[in-house]
Image 1: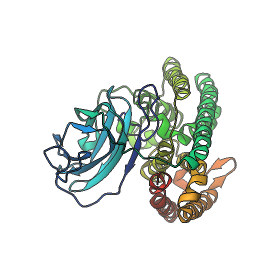
Image 2 (image 1 turned 60 degrees about the horizontal axis):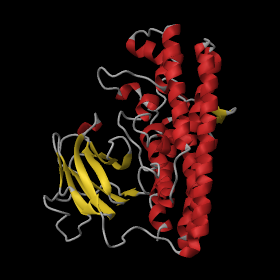
Image 3 (image 1 turned 180 degrees about the vertical axis):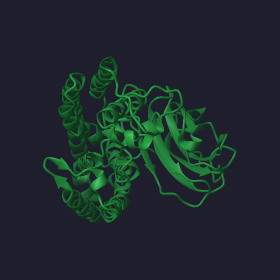
Amino acid sequence: MRPIQRTTLLPIALAVALPFLAACTENAEPSAAGTGGGSGGGDPRAVTVESTDDACDVSTTEVPAGTLTFDVTNSGSQVTEFYLLDEDGLRIVSEVENIGPGLSREMTVSAPAGSYLTACKPGMQGEGIRADFTVSESDDDSQPSVSADDQQLIDQATANYAAYVNDQTDQLLDKTTQFVQAYEAGDDDKARALYPVARTHWERIETVAESFGDLDPKMDLREADLEPGADWTGWHRLEKDLWPQRAEQEDGGYTPLTAAERTTYADDLLANTTELDQRVGELTYTVDQIANGSRGLLEEVATGKVTGEEEYWSRTDLWDFQANVDGARVGYEGLKPILEQKDPELATQLDTRFADLQTLLDAQRQGDGFVTYDQLTPEQVKALSDAVNALSEPLSKLTAAVLA
């Protein structure tokens, strides 16, 4: 993950905020950012944002509650991101990433009244350029709604997803405990075997875990994304210590962690995992969060796993790849009964695309896991990437379809 307090798309405890709907479109041609309330087209919930290398110009700082649309244009020279954050600045309500110079992307959020922050991140580094943002009470109801006939299906889907996430964090805690014990005892072979197994449970619910902006950077930050002077902790810190070969080849040497350092970093990881398990138990979910979470997990595959960047030291990226796909598929299948009523053609397409991608992943299985990423040929990487892209396109339509 990148060094940002990201969530992305999934849950905030109900005591903190009501459900949100978040969705993003693909990069499009730039549109002018306005400077007055809304986008200038008369819609008070349409907001334009212009991100430059040193500014984040938001066309208005207050909008009425309902479905908000942010049209974000990058007028700077660096790739940028835009966030709507909860007022504590930690929980990400919605985000749009990887906006190249001269491009624009759209972000849609269904938000209740409350206090928020907006943030642009030119260069995708640091906390970003932040400003207060207010969603005021509104008399009209523009929140997405579903028919009464669908309520039983919705209740079943959200209950099942909550049970799934809770089960995955329980298993994450159990496997992390075993991993930490082996690592601190110096049983590196066992720790290396447990590493991708434990990570699987994190990756299946990655978009949920990332919603806790204070925990995620401590647990999942990669060294390549570390800001100067920052303390590097979490899974990938221990990964490098267990697989130092690339560091020895590329940097000319590696100094292993001492026994005391191993204990410090491993205990920190376990403590944060325990905290995550406790917090997840307090969350509730909505159908739009589940749908957007599935889409977000496929984006995680596209931006980190299929490129081999996530598990840089261990090369266990395909374990993560499969776990992200697992989580996306579980979210989709929970919503499938609703989708089949509203858009059966989309449901059939998603079934086919998930199956096609799974066939390619199954071809790379080895024993109880997968081949390491460095064993893939360029042709195999391209085939996997193409299958991810083919699935991502219809999956991006899931939220709108289930809320239609």
